[in-house]
Length: 310
Image 1 (spheres, rainbow, N blue to C red):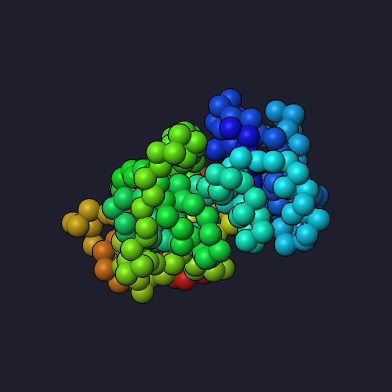
Image 2 (cartoon, rainbow, N blue to C red):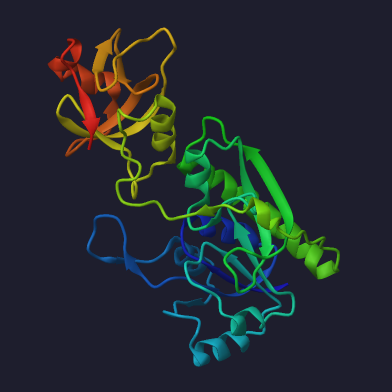
């Protein structure tokens, strides 16, 4: 099938890689080069890098609402437009171009978690399952019918790990959906509006750890965190990013707000339960095991050790 692909981050790039061998991708649309991370130079999106590697034309319009941009897109004569985390709204004029429609790879089990941060919100809510849906795009926010839905367990997973897994799952689901659509066999399912939840963007500092929350809530924040939205706190008066943590056994007792290093393990007392910290990155230093960090903070060996919100 003749495809135009639209996407921007690594999640979308992984899907594009798997789409290319099976379909004719005539052009890729992605967000313009941007400053990413801590550097000051402009960096291409992961999707742009994949497209260039395969010699596919890349277009980076600021908006798809421009009539000339729409005309240039229509001139490609795509049979379908495939979208994955593109980062821009597709107006009706674009949605109407391909005869087989615009198919979106959405990283949630619709209608749960429509919107920008479905993976993170699923982890923060303690969902037992996460997944992907291949949705027919319409003018509403993730409101369209879906034809392929795939789910995997969420227990113990991190946002980073799930992003990779769901990209692979989404790519497979997209190939199935394209075959079904082309053959006229797609079974479209309407979303149950009574079960809709929204995945708002993660706010700055939202994933910081807090002794006034339960250990379970703080553990979910660590698993949902990323470089863009770290799980930060201050342990023994030292600011750190917590990279990995787990719930401590019930027999471990540490008072809320107290931090203790016992039997080569670093524990943070929470409002309910205790969090065991496994890996941290102290400000200005490399990532390290929690025991290596704690060994260098003498206060954590006594009862006066404390931790608090960043």
